[in-house]
Image (cartoon, rainbow, N blue to C red):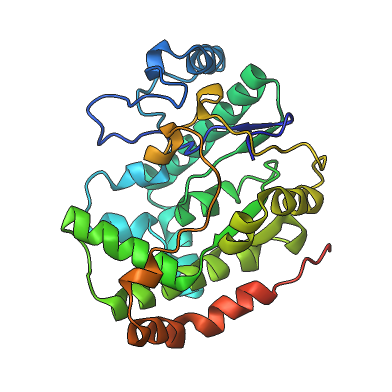
Length: 293
């Protein structure tokens, strides 16, 4: 989406995170402190009174630096809405947490303003895939937030998760549990985000449709959100942008194509098992219609 002339794509706007010993390269192949775009953003932040933060300081999970059960209960997303609302009303009495949340919200607002000024664009793509972060940003009344919900076919998503678990030797290697986790996460997105934002401000994209005809899907998103159509291009080069995120952001440009490795990795019984667990929800996502209300 960053190829549109009215759009600036910064990738994961939360930044690289404090776990990095040093900042990784921006997608333009320069270190953060050598990239003119991010140097200009820092200058604008300073003018707005924000202190320099090597790791952006935009992630609400920074409150969870001490990963205690208590801290997770205080700021983490909870399964039941009523319990979460009750928790939030109680948290306001704990000035340490409530003030920290307000501070991070304020810093996010100023970061957005700085990026808009430096890029001279009013539409910012933030690909941070964090439900808690989006929940807090949706509480800021003057941010016009649009949500693109990308759903991948369950077999591909499960295959990718299992490969990562094997590579890192961390996480579940159970096909059934990994499929259930995919389903629970998707339902959490629906419950915590999609059900709480107007339909005209959200759009569900099926990964396979995007790979099959990216320009058509991008124009559908543009039409939904009131962006000029026909301005996207597949001639994408991350070196011309300033993106943070995973390793994909610094790969050489390549044709968008569907990842079908799962067909060789799973036997028919495994494919059927994934389909049995996930097909009802996945088909529901595919049937979603655009409603402008």
